[in-house]
Amino acid sequence: MKLLSIRHRPRPCLAARALPAIAWLMLIPAGTATAAQRNELYIINQKPASVSVLDATDWKIIHTIPLDPEPTAAVVESQGRFLFVLHRGFFTPDGGFREAQGELVVYDLESRSRLKGIPLGWKTTDLVFSLNGRYLLCVSDGKTGTKKKSEEYGSTTVVDTRTAEVTATLPAGRLGLRVALTNDASRIFVLSLGEVAKKTKNAPSVLTVFARDNPAPLATVPLGRASRLALSLDERWLYVLDPGWPSKKPAEHRNGEVHVFDTATLASAGSYDVGTQPRTLEVSADDSLTVLAQVSFKEDRGKLYRMRGNEKPEVVDVGAAPQYMRRHNNRSGMLVVSNEDVRFLPDAGAATASTLVLNPRKGAKSAGPNVQTLRGLPGELLFLPDQNRVALSVKNAAGASSKVAILDLKDNKIQQIVTTGRGSVKFGKFLGAMAASVAMSALSYGAGYAGAQASGSPFFFYNVYTFAPKAPNVVLAGSTDGQFVYALNTQTNDVTVIRLADGEVLDMIPVGGGCRRLALAPGGKFVYAYTPGEISLIDTQSNKKTLSLHAVGGKVHQVYALEADRTLVALTSQRLLLWNMETGQLARTVEGFAEPFLLLDPRPR
Image (tube, rainbow, N blue to C red; front, side, top):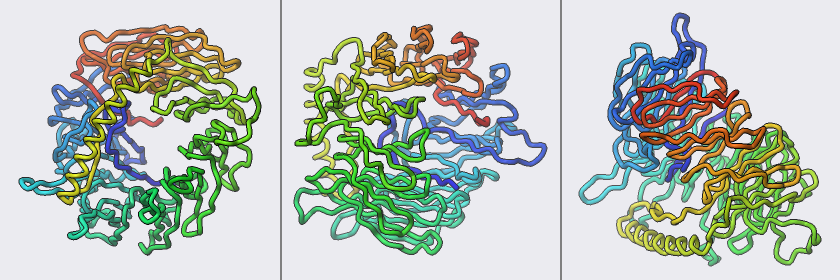
């Protein structure tokens, strides 16, 4: 049984322009046609705000429904009758922020009309369905107050998707909510910053437990600096992570803790030490909880803590400076990636004793003159069709990435390290810009912290300064036959084609300025990349660019891969462009849109 966990995001992902649409299909009463049965897609437009109903059989607009102003996200409910649109949400379609009171508007897709509006809290960040599709949760962070404006606490609004009625609005502490819920939403766990203590001016985290139809809490637990939560797959245990307080001063240092709660009794089942600076809180396929951390503030040797329920954690040594874990596509387990090495952690049993060394620890014995090392930090990980190999982007100390390493997991070695891009990045210029950014960020941080201390408000630090030029990054895709890796270098705006057999660079293909997305298209015959002004297709057989389409009279907002249709859909300022991914040819142009930014596809996948 699966569960959902909603994590507060203080900043939106660069690749995302809106919250993702989540549609869950259920059995429905006879005589009612779902959106999937009607074979309809829904495109949200900004100017003027509207939803275009698109017949996916002949790719024609069959209706346009006017929307209220400022739509920022939308979801279609499981029976295909209602469209829920978030207006004035915190994350704007252009990737910015808006501090406003949100509203959820319900539109009837059968009558093509506005049904009702539901007031939400300030700074609504998430819309998510329970896994059975019955309930929609709208998570609002709230806002800080001033002498002239009152403070608005965070809240979660629960909507019954069958009736479009609010079952409850759940008030939970102050700001910065994170939410987990059971499959049927019968229990909703909300973690917030809690109340401000009158004397200390601290804002301890508070866990509040609700039923879905009652605003009165079932339980309220103060939890120090807790920041994340997760539910076990069997729904018996709730895990809450307190990251602790890392400090080089022993008197001030505090390790992280995982607090465990019995979801049936809502009682504490214990708290367990999980090391310094815990990086993760993940429930694995075998229903165990894993946490990556390090030994101490000064000692960066990695530790992995794995526990089930309220059992004492099993502690496993991993590489120094642990970074993340990724589930292996073809094996029952995960890869644990640290700056020092890569290790395989099976779902049952101890971590593998053999390791693939990335960067030897200082003072470690040399593995030999012919053994390659990363000489950088691990970045993005791409699993290849050959389950024994993965591709890994390589970052330098400043976070810039312009290399790709091919890792052999069978023989535990780095096969090749390939430099991407048509020219070396001018790191002198980059580092100079970074130094200026860091200096200005320090000022911003200091001012924000001082203000929080003076007012007693919780402190959120947003770095509004950015590198100029932006730090280069490598985004990876692979061919379905496992012969080639495609690496987008976001600094040089090109895709490096790498042959896996020998690590040879076959080509460096320009894809336009500002490119931040590279992916394998439906069917696997093409790789696509897009920028606000250009869309590129690369044939995975010839490894040549077969399309370079420049947006005319507007810009490209989003590109969607419709796997079932073997179609690529681009939302541009006034039209939709559809490509047949069997041939790579432009199949259709659909006119009549107004700055579309979000496509909803409720059909089964």
